[in-house]
Amino acid sequence: MKIDTSLTIPQPPEALSQAGLQFDEATEEDFDEIMAMSQDIYGGLDYLPTRYTSWLQETNRTVIVARKEGKVIALESVCVIDDGETMLVEGLRVAPEERGKGVAGVLLRFCSELVKSKFPEVKVTRLTRDDPLGPKDFQKYRVITKQGILLVRFKAEELKLRLSNLISHEGIFSSLSSPSAVRLDHKSIHQLYLTTDLMHGVLPNATVIQDWQPFKLLPSNFAILLKKNIDWMVDDESNPTVASLCTFPFKVPIGDDWYYLNIDMFGKDLSLVQQQLLCHLQCHMATLKGHVMCQIFLDQALWKPMADFCHNALNLELVKEYTEQCVVESDV
Ligand SMILES: CC(C)(COP(=O)(O)OP(=O)(O)OC[C@H]1O[C@@H](n2cnc3c(N)ncnc32)[C@H](O)[C@@H]1OP(=O)(O)O)[C@@H](O)C(=O)NCCC(=O)NCCS
Image (cartoon, rainbow, N blue to C red; front, side):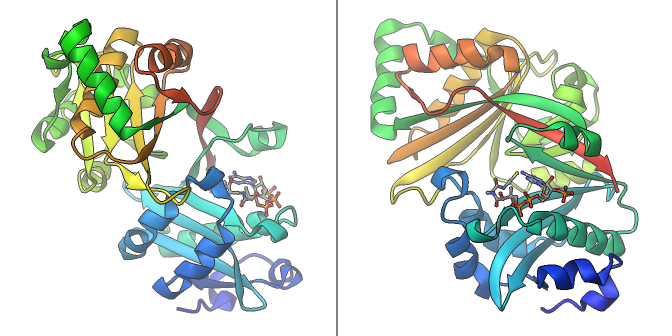
């Protein structure tokens, strides 16, 4: 659908005509062009190919493409969460040959105005970044919370062997079958996260970050979260110290048989974090195949001991040194 920019953009029209950009709401037909300009993104670990179609169906989401001379050169998506108060910016990307010309800035401002006109109750814009933030970013944004990112890689078959050896011979993971990591069903998630404040001491800034999306503890957000295929775990429902959320493995474009597994972990107890990681891996062992990139988001202080644990105990390959996931926010 073409957007009538004269009605929807309160920003100066010169900015757009200078950039020679046209904005459209993204459609299924744009998929190939979007993928073509996304080739180099996140080192081949782009989540967009698996999410694109469902993004277009979400009623609280707007996906916009920018075209130059008819060709798609940029994309941004905005999802309205937190009872309609937050616009969450996701998927931002500009074609390599168009970077450094201010396209992202124009697109960010366009989407912000468009979403504000559709959802007038929006108060803040949030985004999650993993690139180093500079002084200009800190002028623009306040930091809501940060998590360390541990990226490891393994072959599913090798990890299966390793885990079964560890469980049967080394016995050090007897905790896998102990009740110190509990999988939560929808009712218990609702009960624990929304009817008590027990999770406030566990979550960073009372925020559930699920695969890059930061959510406040609100029923409307849990309606979104509980539609997703996620495994929720906690060490103790009545007195939680560590909680975690794990996606199901999804394909990434880096290679034919490559999958991504994202695990968000909250809490500072190393041993409990290790146990939950093992339980999540164990839960997915039956379905995991091929090569797996596993992204573990965790308390910054746990990055090093968890990197050592993954490498030494599980023989997982460390893909990247320490990086950070940073949730930032600004008023609109
Ligand atoms: C990051 C990227 C979108 C920037 O595009 P660009 O057109 O070259 O951006 P510019 O350098 O012209 O910066 C323009 C604006 O984008 C903002 N920006 C840059 N990187 C950003 C990021 N990662 N997230 C949000 N905004 C970003 C800048 O702050 C600047 O804002 P301003 O105009 O208000 O000052 C582009 O380099 C890209 O596609 N990279 C690969 C994908 C990627 O890393 N996406 C970020 C996901 S968090």
